Amino acid sequence: METRVHPPVAAALRLCLHALLLGLLALTAVKAVSGEGPHAGAVVAVSCVLAAVYGAGALAPVVQPRTLAGALWLAALGALWLVLLALSADALWVAFPLYFLQLHLLPTRGSLPAVLVTAAAAITGFLLHGQAVTPGAFIGPLLGAAVAVATVLGYDALFRESERRRALIEELVSTRAELAAAERTAGTLAERERLAREIHDTLAQGLSSIQLLLRAAERTLPAGAPATPHVRRAREAAQDNLAEARRFVRALTPPDLATGSLAAALERLSARTTDSSLAVRFAVSGAAVELPTPYEVALLRTAQSALANTVRHAGARRAEITLSFMDTSVSLDVVDDGQGFTPGGRPEAPDTTPGTGADTGGFGLPAMRSRARSLGGTLSVESAPGEGTALALTLPLPIAVGRTGQDCA
Image (cartoon, rainbow, N blue to C red; front, side, top):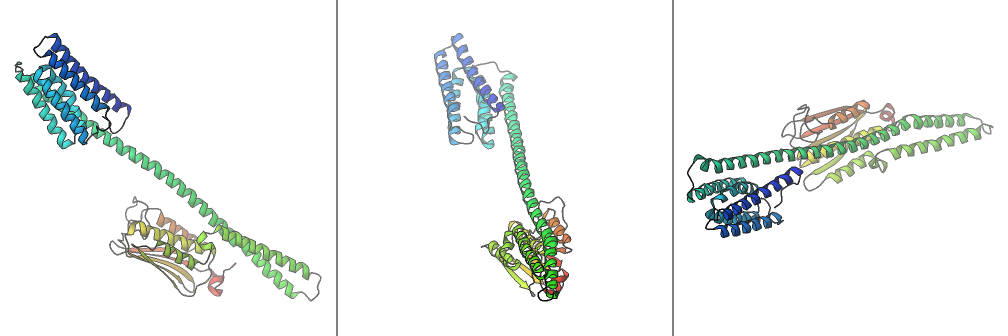
């Protein structure tokens, strides 16, 4: 007979139960022999058989709570106990360990009636042996049954609470590990993007300006001027270093952007997300212009976050991603037909972001807003329960991009 878990307390309880039942059987046999009753030999024999059957079941791995093998073992023990009870009134006390076995091995709806039947059998057997009718003859078995029921049910309640707490602790440890890994990954990506932005905005811009100035200086020099070769070599060195700086920037940007344009990356994102339960469409509006790397990263990350949460939480059938280029700004719209939510709901809600069709109390939406603010943009969310969700990220175009359609680098 095995219990669900094997802590020291459970092992001690099992040993106590074994000792109690075997001790009561030994007591019954000893009293039958010492009293020289008419059935002393039979009492000893039945006690030994009952002890053997109990030991075999206690060691058998197939005897488990709420199984057929457990029920059959209990039935065999009960039948042998009834025979022993018919032979000796002292077998009454064996009912107490049987209570615990019945409560442990049988489901609740079967164990409680079994305990009542066992108590009734104990009282009846005691009376049939011609013993004096006293309140103790009735109270003893019934009180023992009540104590057994209270003990087992209380232990089960404590066990369930302990298991619930253990599961919560395991979940907390797992969540902390996942959160730590996510924070490390987010920190790495943020640092890579920061370095790419810094290189783009400082070194690349400076080298580009130096190249342009040297080119202008080269054109203004008279033919055959001694400084012309030096200026040309300086311009070529600046051009080579500019190309190297741009390679560094590309190496520090997300892989989806390193192999193509932002529109191509969003197209691939839509294709990867589309499956039998969700259709994702992507469209470009307006004349596309080349954007600075921080802009492309912000737009791609926002689309990835919103679309991932649409898949996980919104229960949507369709989603649309639209990248719009306007005269002075660029915007990204992510719209789904999911279950929607009430923006600005419970702050303690789990991590959800626009597109989840759930509350917005998590970290996704604040992260998007922070990214938008860092580039001078805005993020808006429109949703209602049962009406889907629409997210819009708008970033102002840099002056050079807005005028020429070229990256300011």
